[in-house]
Length: 155
View 1 (cartoon, one colour):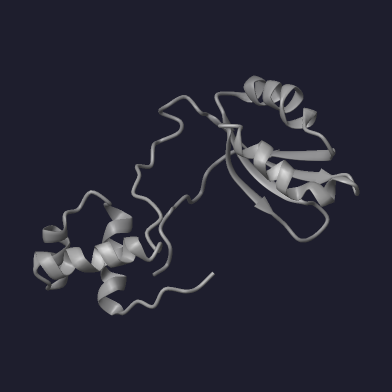
View 2 (view 1 turned 180 degrees about the vertical axis):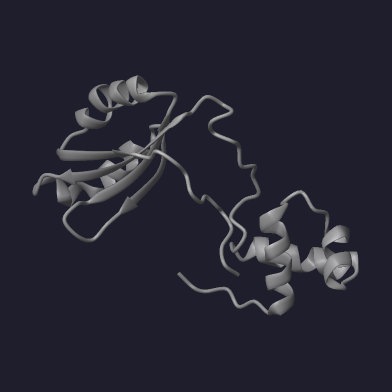
């Protein structure tokens, strides 16, 4: 993957968009000392380069009823390790899985899963996750308190 070259003005734009993606080019330009048109062109260039993947909203999971967050370490069978892509594709179909990371080490994947409660996670575990082919072991850790959560990169 090729890195995108950015300058300090681009960094300022990105910092502002991370805090509030709904800011207009005019509002951003006003804060960083650019007029609307050059600011808009820079934002468009950042989008076109793929640096800005998408502009979405971040919701408060607990206010939507997703009170339980679980981190699951998944170990595949020795035979299953050759099917990492298949496991990854299957996991993408589960809306409860917010993140899935392939790891180096004694486990193969780290999943971040949200559910309304422990019972819902138990159902998800027994009916879906543990039923995937080549899953040898799942170790689940329930998050008690979220000390920090951010989607902002340290630009």
